Structures are given as C-alpha cells and as structure tokens.
Image 1 (cartoon, rainbow, N blue to C red):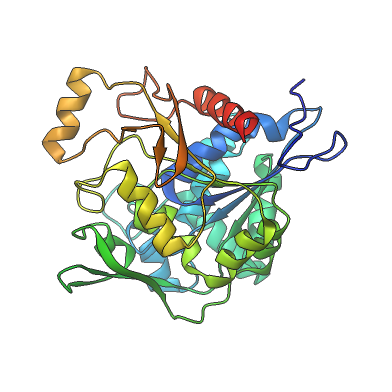
Image 2 (tube, one colour):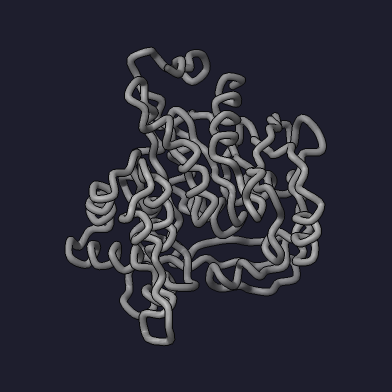
Length: 333
C-alpha cells in the first residue's frame, strides 16, 4: 500500500489525492500511463483527471474537424487508450488506422467512434464517459473546451503561424501565443477539476501546442491559481525540430511561466544519457537532449531522475520510472 502524502498538500488519510494532468498528444498519454496504477489500485487510489488540448488541426483529427465540425478527437482517443487498465482487443481497435487510398485512409477507428458518440449524444463529456466504460479505464478525461479553437503564434521576427501544425514548424522563441476565438469558454468540468486539485501536473510533449495550449484559456489559469495546488512540470526528454529547436530547459520553463501564467513548484527532468546511436539519429533531425544544468531554474527546483525507457527505439519516458519520479517529487514538496 502506498502511504498517504501529508504535509504541504494538506491531505488526510481518508482523502484521495486529486491529481490533474494537463497536456495533449503523446506526452499527456505517457504521463497518464505512468499514473494509472495509482488511480487503479484497490486501496487509497488517486483521483486522476486528464485535461486534453483540442487545437489539433492535422492528420485524422484535422480532417474530421474540417469535414464534420466539432473538436478534434485524436488526443482524447490517445489518452483514453493510455488509461485502459489492461491491453485488450478493444484498446487495439481504438488505435487501428485504416489503410489504402480511400476516404477512410489514415483515419483512426477510435477517432471515428468518439466523434460518432459525441454526435449521437450531443455531448463530448458523455461520449468520452461512454467509451471509457466500454474500455474499462481509470480516471476521468475532459477536453479543455468543446469550442473548436485554433492555436496562433507570432515569432520574434513578426511571422504569424495559424493552426497547431503551423505552430509546430515555427521559429522559436515566440513573442505571442493565443487561441482563436479569444472568448472560447472552457469546459466547466475541467475548471472544477482544477479548482479541487491537490496536485497539477504539466505533461511533456510539444511545448507550445500541447503543454501550454490548455493554459491559454484564462479561466483554467485562474483555476490553477485559486486551487493553490503545487504545479509540477514533467519536462521533455528531447527538443523538437522546429517548435523547440535550440531551446534549453530554462527557456521551456520561462515559456510556460510567460504564456501559461502559472507558478511551478518543481520540474521533473531526465538524467539518463541517450545511447550514442539514438543521439546521432536525433541530432540528424535537429533534436537535442533536454537536460538540467543546475539544481534550480528560474528559482524553481529541478528534480532529476532516470526516466528513459531503455528498450524503446526512440526517446520515451518509461512509465514505471516516471511514476517513481512523481512520487519522489511529491515527497519533497
């Protein structure tokens, strides 16, 4: 049995730890995969909530958004898959992509299922809940908003980028980052989850288009501040060509602080070096390891742990190692 975590988090033995993770894409899915054992255990389970960015305009999600309207389902589907208690044929179906050259080519079956459930029920929250019950997932999952939003950015030279795909190829650092329409309302359930949070985790992933994107909704920023919960950023393992080329860990943290307007309590970073052959492949594409150069960055403590999955062909967080790192960081808060 995992012990309760008393102290600054203000918890009691009979209260579950209420953890809210924000992000999108593969980064949030990796974080939820690391946390699901805590949410799924029989004794003292954590109350886990994922809040997913919905500004994606590429791939299957972008096509569904353009052709049928609504929010893009891809990141929601990816995170639902990560929260399944056990791998099954159903979870494999969720991630199945159609092949060939027809109109379904490239579409994920899970994306189509989510969109169909949302269309039938008229409610994205209900659609996610229905699919969650079929897949047997732990934790809750909410989109940050059900308003179709577009991520926009401007770099230091004044060049504009419209859409998540365009922002992914920007020239960092950015001068401005915002969502259109500017008055998009956040999902009330997402706001409430943050207001009640004991711990807020910012997931790894694309810095501007995943990690920061949710925090561009002012009401979500305010909810994090009002909750008073510690905010912990799980840093990327690598920089990304385009979006974060040449940016170090300090610049990542500074961007989150400036655009997301949250005060972080700690940063979790990787301490394991990449294999030489893997490092060479990343450098050919313009990627570099994102490593801590000191014990603090912008006066925020950095906790370094071995996080790299030694068996993965690419740089990926190992779910068990990331789980241990989060628990150890909690004990230090």
